Image 1 (cartoon, helix red, strand yellow):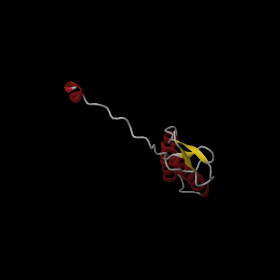
Image 2: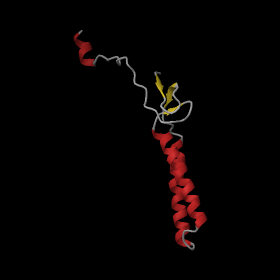
Image 3: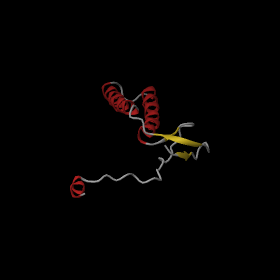
Image 4: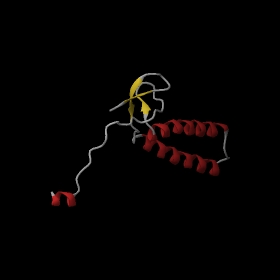
Length: 101
């Protein structure tokens, strides 16, 4: 894999691909957010502690979405551009072209 320069830590690193494991945590945010909303509707409304818990959950999910959808630096976790290969991909010969050869 091609190495890329990280703009946050200024190191030449291999970019980590997006991690699909974080999507379970993102979905759990929406489930818990729905439960918070139902709890607020059934209870006495949005109390301060419920609001703080939801805000903490929402900001944590922002970080998880970044790691679930973008390439990150292996050293510091910052978002980096994916490495671009400079070699052209090999082309395959189609079935119709092999019949004529």
